Length: 581
Image (cartoon, rainbow, N blue to C red; front, top):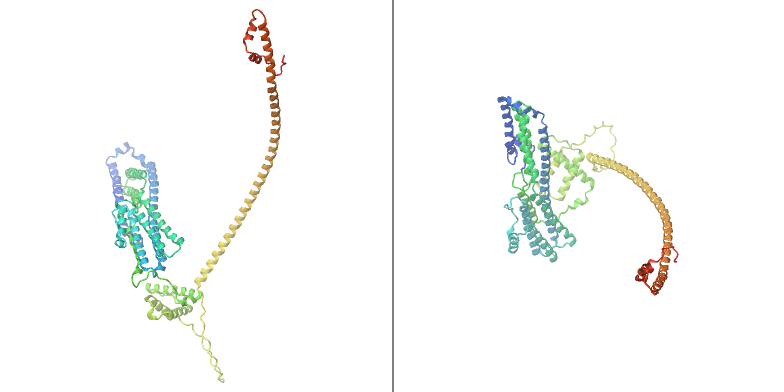
């Protein structure tokens, strides 16, 4: 990534070549502009051909405007996507680095209690952790890097034992496992074992936060890898490239149909073509932030910063240096009143202003008497806590500024003496007045800030009161609406009860009618077998009488004699309601 300053001279920024897309955009803008000049020369040499090809019809420029609108929309979409991918990439890398460093720092703090009792095991845990995290961060950057042949420097990778190095090599080369996930699993195993061994004296629920931060770092890495694995969609890139080439050819034709001056035709053609191709190439530079281009993210700096942060933790293992420093405060600072602290802050502001005025050569504003007294008190408190030989160079410089401020303060002019009265007998000597006490004075700037905050709080309280009243009205309206809905439901339930009662009466009447019909049908079914038996006996008697008669039977009786009695009896049953005879 190119580091530049916007305050640089304009020409220096324009003609900076490293990482610039200007040369590539010129390769398309200059030929297109030259084509405009060539078309104007052709019009001068062959004026009769202008009407034959109907070139004046292009002067309205509807086709050019339509294509420009389409290419502008597509380029805006591509540039937005490219910027989003670029900022998301750098954000994910910073989050990953922050999560993993925070985890290592917490583990260092958790193992501080066992530094004296189990120093050997604690040192082994810390050194192994730092080397594994540095290697995991470098492996993560190698994974998202477009060029897989790049390797990043780690913190003493050869300090790991041979078994660990061999395991990592086999996991990557033979098994083709993901090295970042392998190292992350090794770190979690290392944490768990040292928790069981007592090196990490921390409750497991608190230690679980470290597991979570390590996992969040891995999630950020996978999101960054999503950017490196996913390219800008090919259909969009193809359409944009086609429209850009069409625009580079069609723009000179449209410009020469309107402008006849060769210089202005060159300029008017150059500007849009150069802008379109420049934006397209800029989007291409930003779409893949993890490459080797000059505008890509500096992954080497990310690794160096991570190594430096880890070395800051491991420096405490060197004799004479302590990384697990326990911060504290001077005993006298615990008894300092709040007003004196406020005056000290005001004095520091005056000191900073005086130092800046000395550097810039501007005459400093003379401090007040209260500020001078505060500076004297500050010098006295510093010299009480530590001797002048124990103060640092910055504190000595601060004391010199305080002394200069104290020297610039002028005492208030004394009133003119009154004329001497007539000599009188000398009175008894009066006791000496007590020394004046220094009354702390609140700075006017602080008072103004407090008044401003008070007014803001008052306005906020008023706004909240109005919002509360509005919410009250809304709640009241809702309650009225709910009351109406409840009443409507009650009326509906009452109407439904009445309808149910009517339907119950109708169903009861129909049930009674059905019951009566069923009784009639059952009586008819009970009477049917007896009637059938009586008819069958009569038929049998007729048939027997016919057979006992001498001589041939009539044709009708022969058919009856051949018909079974049961069938004949069934055929002779009277219809329902007819007399049995």
